[in-house]
Amino acid sequence: RSAYLAVVVLASSSRAIAAEPSESQLVITSRNGGADLDVRWDIALPDLSFVVDPKEDAQKQRAAINAYAFTHLFLSGDGVPCDLDPKEQTVTGSRIILTGVGRCEGGTPVLDVDYRLFFDIKEIENHRGIMRLNDQESHVFTTKDRRGRFELDAKPLKFPTVPTALAAASLLA
Image 1 (cartoon, helix red, strand yellow):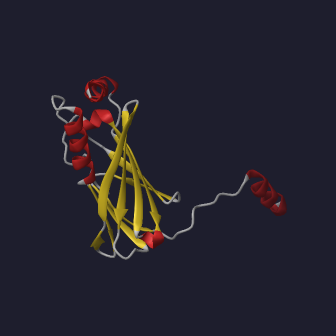
Image 2: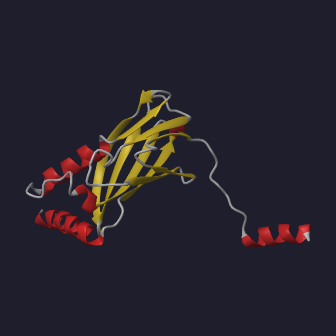
Image 3: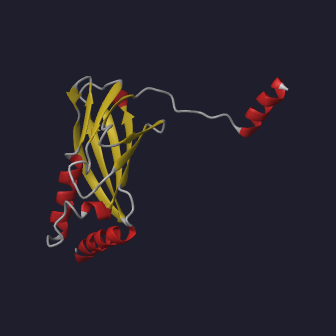
């Protein structure tokens, strides 16, 4: 338990030294026609020092992290809010990985995302959330661009391989 606390405290002091920009990576994967969502969220521990009391025990810190993070991410489909449940937390280096599952009643072809992580904390300037949806689309959320609407059934982007690109170029020559 004290190891968890030590990681959060150590990470918070390293943020001041490193002065790294605040960034998180959010990966959402949909299943069953958009009815079920798997969420993986990598967040820098130093940023969480503004929402976690280092005097609390590890269990209360974990609860505070989940409460903060998952109340700053709003998902909906066709105007109906999706339920989002946190599942696990794993600390790796100076990051914490949160996982969760979402349920959008009846499924949805379009997912609306309202991302607000750290946008309410003055000490964390210029936070950006980088989201990848169904291994196909990336979007960067900022305080000026915190909402997005995304098609869940879009095909993953494919890029031509080098031999294909060279073959196309030789046809033009």
